[in-house]
Length: 286
DNA sequence: CCCTCACCCTGATCGC
DNA sequence: TGCGATCAGGGTGAGG
Image 1 (cartoon, helix red, strand yellow):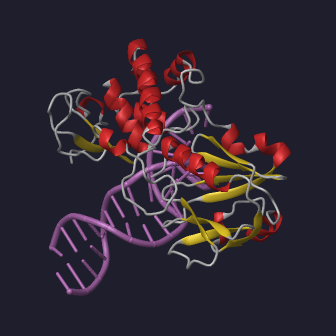
Image 2 (cartoon, protein in one colour; image 1 turned 45 degrees about the vertical axis):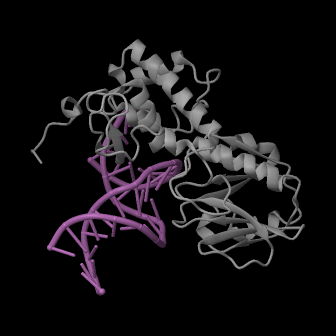
Image 3 (cartoon, chains in turn blue, yellow, cyan; image 1 turned 90 degrees about the vertical axis):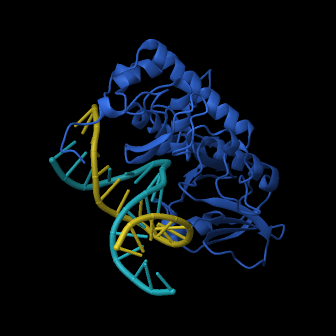
């Protein structure tokens, strides 16, 4: 499940492997992967002869800068890139193949077919709606405390739902949301507008630190996948709560609990972060 | 505007 | 052993 650190790791790998290469032809095997306004047919045709100059990232989006086009790629849940020699048998779940002029393929694999590609004219790349709407990158210089505080004060949604919202801050997904809230010792269900100034500052720092540490570790690898870009991360050894249900909290030894917040599996320490009971909606017991 | 939830997909795992 | 139900969750869009 690629979040910012995994996508950044993929970006670095792609820049090493395919920057400078030229696209000879493109095969799309799952048409829905290519988003409007362009059909998959147009997508394939427009990319012929384009050189890949560099690959950028914004939030969880990859942006391939070509001669005339910016190709935006989102890996969603399970998207992966591989680089292989042309002619190697396609692995299962191969949906898009960029044949390069140097006898290699850049291949896109995605078990669940959630990933998406789209094309923007290079001079209008800033107009790509989904990226325009993103919140700041989670770095000290871009993610200001004042802006974060202002956003939190305007909603009573659960704080976890808010930090997963890409319009508030870009790049945080389910793993790093849980880890950041644990680090800041804040309950995931706490209404955002109930965080005091100290908690808000702590959470901002936690998000910045957790993401930066994960980028440095090359992301988190839950399952290994040979020869796949960005899947040799080491951050999983640093996880404190994500996927640790019933294991001892590394801070206080209390068993980690799992619940659902904003339709997402949510791991937290009931002692360090407090019980969720006081935030649960009243209703029939069950 | 604010918020919740279904949907898109497949594979792994769970309960019986 | 089989088999249906459930879970996994990023982003979008429908609808309350």
